[in-house]
Amino acid sequence: MVGMSRYDLTDFEWRVIEPLLPNKTRGVPRVDDRRVLNGIFWVLRSGAPWRDLPERYGPRTTCYNRFVRWRKAGVWDWLMDAITAAHDGDIQMIDSTSVRAHQQAATAKKGVQITVSVARAAGSRPRSTSSSTRKASRSGSA
Image 1 (spheres, rainbow, N blue to C red):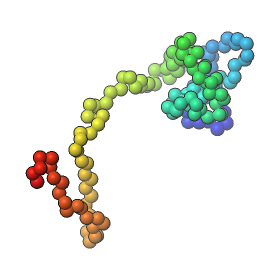
Image 2 (image 1 turned 180 degrees about the horizontal axis):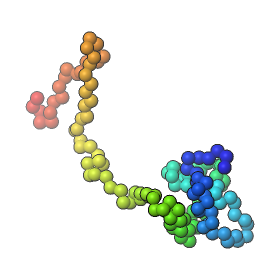
Image 3 (image 1 turned 90 degrees about the vertical axis):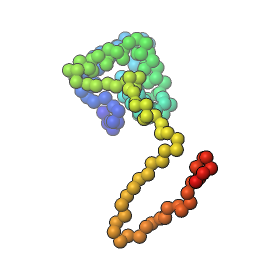
């Protein structure tokens, strides 16, 4: 494949997935499955909206419709099981619904100021001076 993106399927992944893809053709023949899958993975991995899908993956409606249709049919579950089996279970997936951050990771307390201190080199002049005014406290006493 010419000009592979970092989100595109590797040849190994494609060899595992290709035989598992639904192959019922109704009406119009399907476009290149690998190109459409790469487009779907580009959106999912980059977090970009469908409307920002690069043209090299074909029409965004094709990628989106295939994603939705296969989600309803359970195709994605089959594919993920096949990929996991191909890697002998040596694959890790993280779902953001199960990832938790420590409660203090969400926000900093109001009024907390982070100060970075760097020792000045000997003989160098200060590049700026700190403010000589002191902030008054909320109670009014200094």
